[in-house]
Length: 288
Image 1 (cartoon, rainbow, N blue to C red):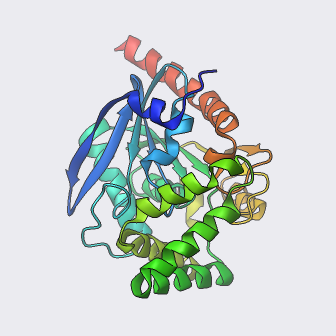
Image 2: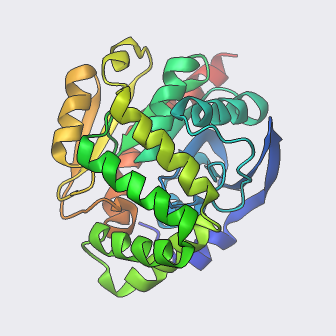
């Protein structure tokens, strides 16, 4: 299996830039050649969080790494703090750039992918969700609300808190903790995108999407970290109950930031899931 550092993986990007989608400019990186696969990061992350994983994917994948509105190099625009808007941004990228594609989402990104699958099943060929929950409990909602208050009133305190949150989400590769925290702090910039996305997560406390998941008509695959305290195994069980036909895999010895803890295992599982899609797409192309 190919092993590349994040800087080396970045050098493999065949294209980087921005694309205008509605009220925002979305930053992207595209790597590899083949079938399009969209990667959507989580809260307080950016497209670079996928570098170690996509560098390990097999040939035949054209990875599109996107920054959510207000994260990384994407502008926040007129953010309304809803999952629906974030999913609309993803759908707009699919519609304008790639056409129908497999969509992979981590944490908040997984929620966005599931919502996009509900809104635009014509554009989401398959949904792969990692460390994702369809609802937010009272304690988690309180956590996000506290971070929102910090980000809007004490940005330095918010950045320190984000570093502490990162410490609790990484089990392995502890030697890289400072670099991971620094990248996440840089990804949220002035905090406006974090606030917008955190409000979307708080919205799942009042209006969980669990029951709506039964209406998803595209294939879904769920990946869960064995020791994820931020999105525990119970969250995956709820997803599986709502979508009994969904595939499932558990990554051992992994906390919430699975891509940081177990990039090899996560890439291996994604490669297995994507293999069938690549073969199917090639067959459809050959028929045409």
